[in-house]
Image 1 (cartoon, helix red, strand yellow):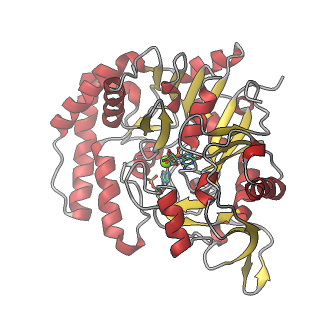
Image 2 (cartoon, rainbow, N blue to C red):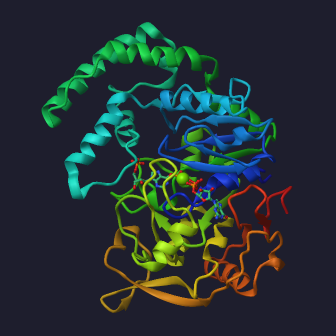
Image 3 (tube, rainbow, N blue to C red):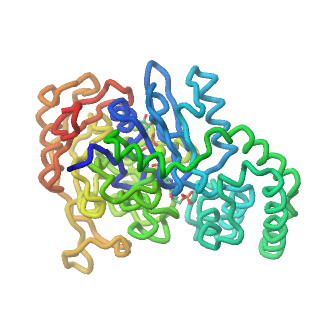
Length: 434
Ligand code: GDP
Ligand code: IMO
Ligand code: MG
């Protein structure tokens, strides 16, 4: 029997508008689950005249009745989580054990992870990755290393935590002094701060995999909320300019503790153009007036770091790879309204290298390619008020159809503005939305 579950993943380099799509779908679901990444994510939801930027807390929290889960695959920063929980409470969104559960197996981002992230980037200079400095890579590295890792379940045992922090901080202090000449961290202050976080979060920390497996066996609908985007995937992205987790739909089973069959319908979110923050190849980048136009109209400044995002044309060649990788069943096309007012719209349909067409897309082979573009007609009407496909100007309809044709996937949802209701339900197969 096919599952009713939904997995929402980004198909580009993150910031595709996943937050809005997750929020739109969440009201049809019982659980919303983060399975990868951590506070490097910045997912925006605009609703009721308010803008919410979510980093660690799943976007389902804005829908009453949804239980939100931070899965074992997430690197969990308890300080950021509590700031976010308090910030939501101050705006009338109550978050507690009724609507948020945190996996006891999620690895904890510690102060030394954030410090190492910054120090290492500084040391790399112009060769830096351009990380969000949220300690993501160092925390996943310790997860793999094991003996210097701390998991969320350990936050609730103050005595054990104090001993472990003392031991690990000593190791980290010696490494940081030798490598970066950094002053030592105060282990007892860290232990006190993290034990206090553990005290507040204890009611929410539990075995989330067991909860999800039971919910799935009872036929309750689960939505898996991807972070980042497929091109930032640790294995399948533009390595080393990637994040440190399995962000595509392939990461769902291990990052949430569910079988692969639980992934359900995969909704691949794409921007109508492309953006990227941080370093790394970006063949369709427009470091010119077109890129600036997209950046200003799309407010392309990072939700997490405030950095200006690099912008360019839609790379349909890379997109087709991401569709194949994630098994996206349908697409959600966002920020279509940003394209209004351009003279023409280009879509990259292939690459050439040394004058020859590149046959097979390879994320490791994007540097130095020449893009093959198809030019499509543009439109000047603002489309933010369109609510049906037929309301869109013919050129915008044509753009959607060309993406469908090239990727071989239907566009299920079209987003024409940041607000929750600026959405067109098109060719979706998700029950309750069609
Ligand atoms: P995410 O990380 O994938 O959730 O995306 P971000 O929240 O980082 O970035 C997407 C930005 O675009 C946010 O500021 C959203 O409010 C905004 N946004 C989402 N959908 C649309 C849309 O259809 N049109 C416009 N103009 N903005 C949108
Ligand atoms: P959402 O979920 C865009 C990028 C960083 C950097 C690289 C590695 O909002 O789409 P990291 O801090 O993870 O070690 O940084 O990955 N990156 C993102 N870019 N959106 C994100 O998340 C990102 N999360 C990480 O800019 O290039
Ligand atoms: Mg984002």
